[in-house]
Image (cartoon, rainbow, N blue to C red; front, side):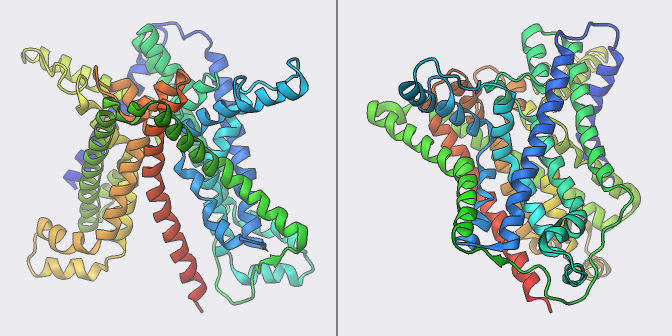
Length: 535
């Protein structure tokens, strides 16, 4: 229990430091210019992406669940692949194709004249479109699971009472799926809130971008923390809204047998139209970006044989992999410690402390980064006041240690959830038997819990490593001089429109992100097979 409390304190300290500094400095500094515009833009962006993801993800989930059409069984899993392409990579590929100098507008001007009007691509609607195409799988996965898990008797009862398939969807299935839809939309809005690079590509200034610009541009420390508190309030509001959408209703899946929702075959042109819709979703969110990145990489290598031999490429990839590996190992070790402590203790205090360790994932990276800087600045001042010469110096915030600490805070939640899920499957009698035979906590962890939870630990390692590979705001805020990762390199090159040079590190990020997506697909297929096998 003491170790669990220590881990919870380590995770919570930077976030609390931001809150205390931001609230404590109210009135002492003027708010940054354009604050009202940033707030309004953030709300519009979050609402637009949530609505777009619900429309695309929810619609595709209903399409592949309620109907049969050509290649439907393949698209059920291919529609998850856009999760492997981060929004900031999809964003600069989108701009390279549709911006003023891109092939689409160039072709339109060639056919229809130079005076043709084309909507502004670098705008809020453009950012909403790109982020919706990148994030809709969150809603798609949860909505499809909810549609598959409903009670067959519920659906059959509605149909026997004369309701058609469409009315049954509106009156029965969608209300029952509301918790899953709300959870998916909350994930989408959290990802939108934490985005940093995509919105800048499209000239959209959100509150999260404002934190970085105030911090790096004006060095107004207190104004940056006040904006960080505002970002944190947005995150809390998203979580509260997700709970409010559920209301006081309780959703239970009753037992019972029945035919349930049976996919209806779409004949002729309607079936091929459904196939086309799924093809467009997969192509725009995954296939076209990957093909374009490959084309840039091959074209760059053909024009310049030394293109692939850039010495920085190897250095930045090694930096990325080392940070990801150390972060994954640290997060899993802490997750095992917390999960093991909760399992042996089982008290309310340990359980509450364990939940505190997971809320770092709901905190935007910019807030975590500033919180780490504030925490160690405060510690440095305290040590100097206590007579320690130089305090902490730049041991943490001036080195990669600061990045690693922020990463652990940010990504401990997925590691703990994966490890705790495996621990939960271990019968309590096994742990009790080991205790009764005189085994201590460390021996139980090494000889009992670890071997039985290896699959969950492996998944946790992979999920954290991939999240660390894609993370951008934390590295931008905390990186020491001369240290760069693949995500930062992609961001800097794409910001200067060096598409070909950005293709290689972007492909590395996408290739790494495909692995957990494939694992997620495999788990979903196994769960669906188990559901079908139940009597």
